[in-house]
Length: 314
Image 1 (cartoon, one colour):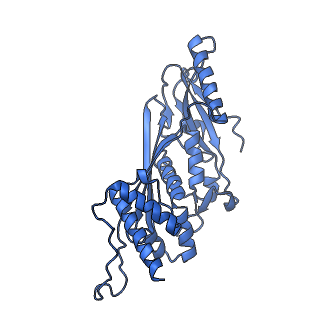
Image 2 (tube, rainbow, N blue to C red; image 1 turned 180 degrees about the vertical axis):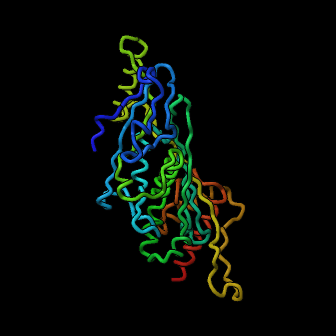
């Protein structure tokens, strides 16, 4: 669908003629508005709104823009990929991600992953808005869905990536009021997103200087020079036992796990032992040792000792 007859820029000059009624300019039967405002009455001085249209592919599911809505026959939902596209068009800058991993203390098996993301964008009044949301993937919940072990293993393997993209998609959907499901013809309508941008005047020396700096920064990011603005990513690991213990554990005495060689071992000694055991057993720490908390270090050390004992019995 062509949008050449519709405005692509809203500026103060446009608003001189009165408020812009977005629903009038972009009828709901032809477009999906991914903007919190429906009427634009004024803009911060020296700014304009640049409108973008995002057309999703609703014909071929393999393109990744939609998936069939569970338990709703005939309806489809925008994918995380599609929602992130819309968020990018609205100018959201994702600046921080925190990942929490839950592991079983003895085996160090990954039980759950949770990602929380933070983004920011400039709204239509010039205010900085923060958006945030989270998504979790839990092994026990996946098992309850009846998925095969192979499918569960695959989802757990890529759980971090799925949680990050899912959290971003949830944040976009919530911020711009995007429904969870559509009829195919509804989702096939172009989405309209807008971002607030300065009106540059090349005759103004300050504006010219800022534009040159922006251009240099873009080149630095492209060619790997200078400072970049990559999002901050932090990670933590939590040890917890599975809620379901093996059958019979309440009646049969359990064999005590080998204790660390010294419960009061200095952390440096623990790290040295971890390195030795990892090399001996062909294991890798889940994250750099210097980034692990003391409980996680000792938990991982205990796990390696258990593995060493198992190898000794074989």
